[in-house]
Amino acid sequence: MKGKPNQHGSLDDHPFSYRSTGQGKVMISFRGKQVMILKGPKAEAFLKRLSGLDAIKQQLAMAKATGNFKRGNERG
Image 1 (tube, rainbow, N blue to C red):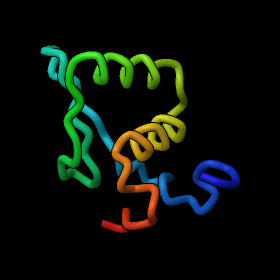
Image 2: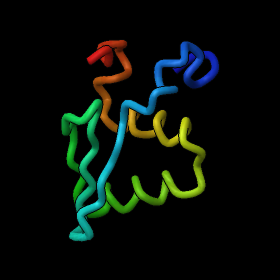
Image 3: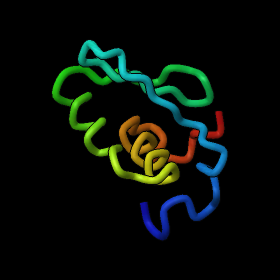
Image 4: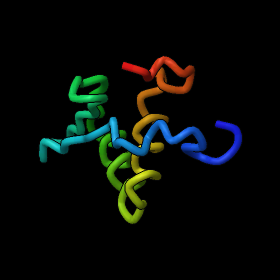
């Protein structure tokens, strides 16, 4: 992503959320709809990446993790 993260304010309303199942899985949702499940080492790495980040940077990390949201189709 070029420029400043969230330069257009598209993550200000926190469209992404995640839930850890505690069984080595992380579910990522966009506007309440599940869009990705991470398992095992990928889930662990994702949770480590998010720890210590502020809310907007967490939103950006979730957007990058889903992949499809790099192309501007996240209007939902």
